[in-house]
Image (cartoon, rainbow, N blue to C red):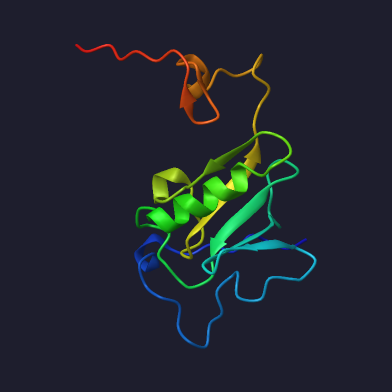
Length: 139
């Protein structure tokens, strides 16, 4: 059984040494689903919590601890809108978020059934990125 690699938080912003490959540098061909634009790759998650879970990673190193950029969000949206079933896109960008790799990546997990979990979009009537019945309470 292969153990999931982890890196200490103190090394989170450091670019890996040239002689140390990124955990995504040599994606096994059987794990790669597609290249999403020039900057990202969608692959099966080797260390998944639920099946089927995917990883959407940057092809070039960007620190996992930094906020996502527009290009990352665009890649995520591109994948989500083409999935045949509902998935959630998550980014665990800090120690408290449970990150274990310094190389920027997002995870796609199957969305729990609506009758089991009410998520933020459900509560506010948001469907497919559009608000159907949204009101903001101001305090």
